[in-house]
Length: 409
Image (cartoon, rainbow, N blue to C red; front, side, top):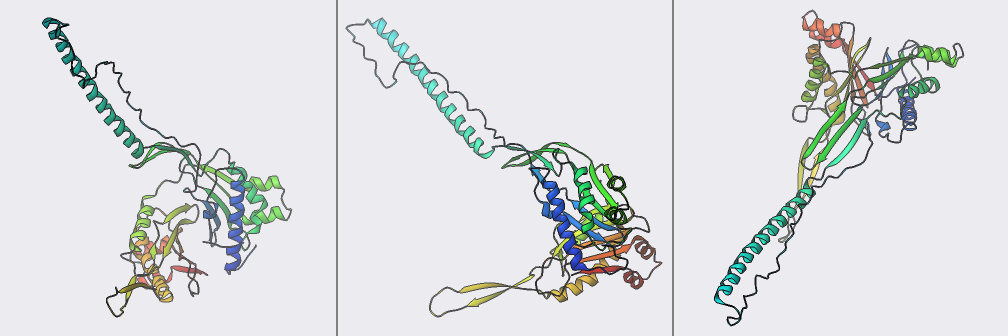
């Protein structure tokens, strides 16, 4: 969800400026990363989210990978063809003059000939067997050729992530305007694995090695950025105020996983009458804030009409399929009402957050030109509201009124 920065004491945010500033900041961050590695790609997929009263969070997703290593092709060995040492042609008849050989010698020659014929036939059968084995091996080589890649998602020894984050904070963080003094600028680099080796074949894929490594994150308050840029504190003092942490990759949280799965199913193609979810929502837990779910949705055609053109004579019919586009404004209005009800009904399944923490849905609505609907919506509610409703201490009407909906155009 895009947003922007400069000191701002009120609650009003210039959304266009925020979007612009975050897009530029994402581009700068991507450039800093790519300059440290020859294998980086996908920088445009860096997430940038502004969260009111918390700050802006840049997330380098774990699915941004780069390939490092060569392709190995494995072909089975071809069986050796046996050596054959037979001088006799089986098609030749025994041409021996009775006058030159005695009957005993003639008998011995015939017996010898029969033995050589049998040996030759045996060798011929072995050759045919080996030809068939060679044929099968060649077919297997075509079907089961194995490709091996070493994959390092989001992590490379070439990239000094701490240096990248400090450089961004010291040289470019001030370009983000409208943040309050107590709001933060946060960069999170997610790295599920350091080394993964996969083997691909036409029959499928197999992971044969993996090793977990730490995530790294950096954060600093907006007031510290302002103090550094105004000369109130020196560079070394400012860097000391940048909080850099390395920790294990965030483990799945059972109730947050469940909530993400519920959203994915509720807003699926066959159940939703408004928007539908494009993949399971991604979530992250922010210390001192709560949980943020990042969601991408779409509202595509849901019905099809057929226009049939008939012509005289025996010509074939011409059939044209046309999609009936939904009324986007009406779809959005219904979605906005439904999402509040969804948050109230299913948000209370979350148990791992404290009462004063917040559940926020960062929902991207997709591009819709000439539509009077926002690009994204932030739906947020305190856990205390959900728990009080669950305990029947709040009416449904009052609880729904406490759910915030912020539209970003």
